[in-house]
Image (tube, rainbow over the protein chains, first blue to last red):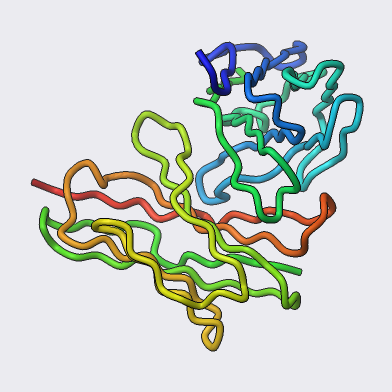
Length: 114
Length: 116
């Protein structure tokens, strides 16, 4: 089905472990984003990508790594998970420059770091 | 710097009541875009509307209407005759500029509960 998918939907891990959250979109949108949603903070941008092999930091990038070797995939890696990274993570994509294009969101991944 | 304030954190209404969700923004740019997104209990964010800074016309879509007032830097969202299915978290967001270096900043969201 067309759209934007995230996997896994739920993940429990331990402090210090590496975790990778996957994001896949079928629209061939050039822009992709990773947000985290925390109570009292709304959504905060972690990283974004304007095209394959082009990524840049958002508001809260520390502790995260991204890559984008293919247009349709934008994985987010927590290199050494910490409890403060317990959150709901949303991937999004948009067709063009993100100031005027709406973003389409995936279903989210709920990550718990013990 | 840009900022989006959604001062209401939780609103509870009875079905068929009208409800207005407030959004106040701050920006120094003359060109910017405002958005509303809905996050139902299923969790996925759904785009509702976009408004650019040069278009102050109010918009109505079914039971939804939006009031954009640059003079007060507000972009309020009204649901008329609310229904239980309107229960969700609603986010207002602001984007400045026209290039890839612009940012989309979300407010903290308003949780709307519509009781039968």
